[in-house]
Length: 475
Image (cartoon, rainbow, N blue to C red; front, side, top):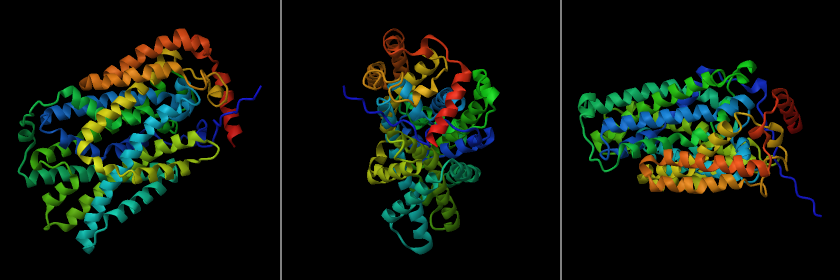
């Protein structure tokens, strides 16, 4: 009988995080999330939602959508803190050793898309600066150069990313508030008059909530890629859920919600005052030729905002996913380079006029995965994972030909519901995926391919011992 070929499942960049690698404090994590959340896609989305929704509805939609995402970030970041593993490894428990590449690829595509899109926005701002200072313009060259700089920054690892975010976050917030003042002053607009505007009702509030959730639902899936580096003492990590995730919850909620609301208001103000969703065109119109220094400062803000979001939200996650394809052959550095090049080659800026529709599609693709992850980790396994088996070819997560049929069966109809009920698409997809996946795993797959975490309990000491073994094997 022919011996089955072993899968490559262990690599130095995807093994459980060592104690000395957990260096991000709660405050540092808060700043990291400000850096992630101050992206101009939020600006553009808010501007494009007007006049379909009123300014008040847009802000409410942003608040509700991002509170839900913040909760998901904390919930799905738990296994990163507790076990030190990235998203691409955990998802093996849900989809199987080969099946994992399905949700991993689905997660990587939006991140790669946004990397290219936001690189274009940053390069366009840099191009305007070149025009103002030197009378020179070459957008294509600047897209390549700006993309290369971000790829290099990401390839340097989490410490380099963390350092940049801590430096960039305060300046981005200050300049963002100043930009809001400039727009309101230029168009003689007050907050009271702004929020007195009405929408035409062509879309519902629920639609707006789903759109804003689409901005960061990608990050909810791979929250563990960041939380695995969060500094939480061993006792708290293995204690109650609240002790484990207190710092994560604070940083996620405050960092994400505050930054998103600020940029929603800026973008919405721009949409109402100018009718234009392009932040670079708005800055040029607002400042004109009479304020070249201020224009350069504001455009520099665009560059830094895109840079800070791209390196953490749009390059780091797909880099880990690339590693998971071939753990022993592809390093994190290689993964960042590959993801970055793809993001530039596909030229996603060609679809700039359709961001709300794109975000709905992202929700349809990713919401079922979030539901399956939640159901598997919390409802079925009760936060218990078998680390050794996650990294062992032919182990308990092999299922049928290394693919979990329960996950595939739950995923497809759950995703379809987003298009059937677009106003509440994320909610329906999340619920349907849970309703389908739970009984399929509990009464069929979990028994056929025995899952001890579902029917029993793994001893903590055993888990810690296996973590040491996995780290040593990858050396």
